Image (cartoon, rainbow, N blue to C red):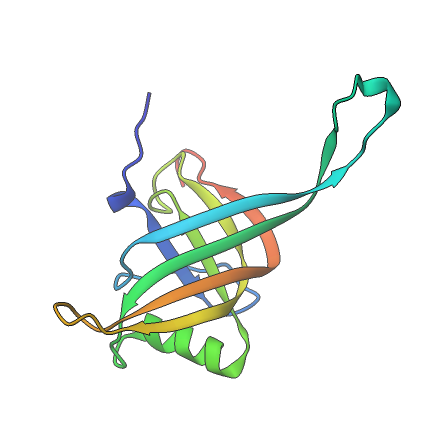
Length: 144
């Protein structure tokens, strides 16, 4: 069994319409939430059990970055949020160069860009990105 560690995960970003290829080295904790909507499909023949079918999938990426106006990733996220535009994101379980790593690739809108100002810590941005265009589920093949 191969265990994946969060410290080895990588968040890639880039230009809308292209696969994110730049590593966001300034990012802290990242979470990838993937959920499916559901439609109730009750039938009399299901023994009184309410059945469901999955409908639309949702992908949401949350992350924390230091407030550093000189950092390219901070700038890209800020520009996407303020301009209400998309940016390419690809949160992977590890490097693009290691076989078996995987994650979603697409264009995301930044829906949250909150500033945290803890009295005993650095000023940082708590961000949420939601998928707008899904390109593919990337799995790094051997020899990539």
